[in-house]
Length: 313
Image: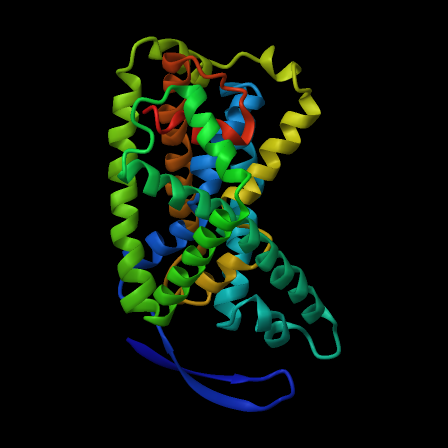
């Protein structure tokens, strides 16, 4: 599906181009949610939760999602829909004549590059773990043995670089196929597999021995644990995670906003994306924390937490 858009460029040159759209509203929601859902939910949220006090941290995090996350998400959608461009050109299209709003695009562009350096590296770690699990590389290893595997990976820049390159090339390949045949079709299938797999893993973790201790740590608010890292640290971590998990502040969601039709409510789309994003984050904790207490893993293990815990699950 295509539609024509006529725009006035930054220097006043009018041009018309055909722009591909999503095949369905469900596809748009899942792809937009897929932009927000990622290692921030599956990897970062559990280890922050473990470091910052469990359920008490989650309550503060949810408050920031509602108070700050949704308004900023709606704002990014609005910029994208009004301009029909990404952050690279949206402000040039929308800014009043003579103003300098277009300079702010560099914040989003540079932020996106920096984020992708980080994302592709951690995704490469996950790809390596997928390979190790597929060939039985974790069979018979306890939590310490799995931790040693992760430590060996971090000390091997060639392996990390190779996996990162595979991730980058795969993403370019998906984008090359186009919005509908590539990004939408593949993301819809992968999101369905992700949600199903996470539910299966969560049920498995909850049924492990001593899982009740992990569930209590994760779901029962104990504000005394917030005092250990410090209230200020917990609040700033929760606020940062609310922005990070929704991919806010770099213009990523403005791209998806540029595909939203005038008949759709921006707040409604934002609520759907936040709900899916939060669901994945909460289920990630249900996978990790019962397993931590079942296998004797410290929930305050930092960024290593997922990579030490998940192979045992």
